Image (cartoon, rainbow, N blue to C red):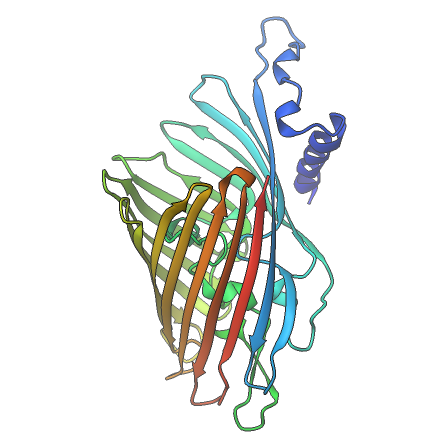
Length: 378
């Protein structure tokens, strides 16, 4: 916490201490004189940025009427403030700090049919120091993304900001209805579609190699409570294609899972804008020795029909088995469209998703969601 307080103090000084200047107006640090003659003071750049991401969601849970509208700060790419500090001299050594503060007036995790207006949440999404060498790699220390969190970069459809391949993020808190009674059950979307069986943002120390062999990189990290993960990626841009692949493993990412492996494969054709993005996952459960598995495949089309920004269309299908109990099955199907307005750093999107659960222990009605969202980046 003391480390986080220091970094937040830097953020406050940068925003307020320079007469509320914008990032481009922050005084140049090269004006600082060395305290001791002959000692070179490192030169640093300061980049302040942010994002506002609001979404509006209507829900059909089978209860006979539409629920909502729910107004949310999306968890797909949350509203946030970010400060990035890094050295800018020609030395091969690198030193930097990254602070990201997530701002949720209403977080999807806390929104449900019974709670439409949860309390606001402010959370530390990143508070880390990075140091290393361009030849030997980099070490990230503090709160941040884990090594296995590669799906953020693997979606080539053009809508990753509004709807990631982890489809449960948009509406985690919603409850399924019991098919027989019509009443809300105790089962939420998060229980099947965004389980705690993955490492995402946590306190960790992570090593990242430099980019090897023109596109290959390895990562590995140790997190709190004895958790660890590792990943290898190969991201390559060819003349006509973008290609991305990775494999990752998480050891004891949660109490319910002993381990979890993920394979990601994606490709995009430059001229046509057609893409396919996919994830395949298999885990080991600590209860009943189950081996939950799932996959999702997304087809996308991104075209520059309008001079102000690209238009993206996607459709995806996902399936999972043995997620909570033996012989259960989940399905998800979604369709989205997103329009970028590049001169304004503004995106608008709309989409539909259906969540269906087949379980020998629960008889649940499907949930359908319709979402309208807007993203502004500064």
